[in-house]
Length: 147
Image 1 (cartoon, rainbow, N blue to C red):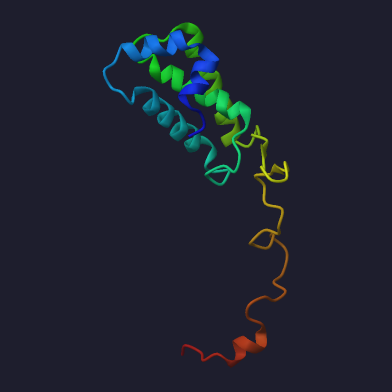
Image 2: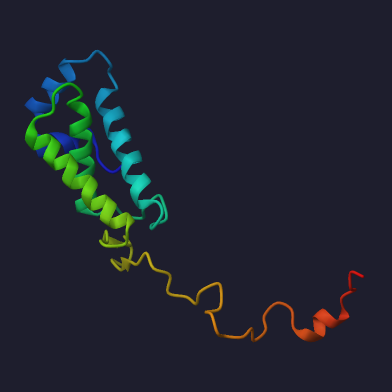
């Protein structure tokens, strides 16, 4: 998960989170909201970044908190809670459309993980010819034909 209950408390206060917990009888209410937020985020970024992420950037943790908080306000979210949720989803949509990046760092090297492959494409661009690979012409000539 991208956030914890402690992260929610740190961002929004212990009083607010406890008031939201009092309104329901489900003891896993907060964890469920955080899990829902994680799954919603993964649905947006999973097409661009390999999951699970090697390191959670702070902006993703903030968005997870905003989304989970919105889920906790299941009856009447305030305008501020709704706006933060909508802003988080708008950013995640830009990430999914390759118009924004998450800036994920590898923990051991602090290198930014690029979601674009740095190796050659798996197919040759249009207008190029095949220059060999697994099977050359000599190998193909030795194979039985299907006549």
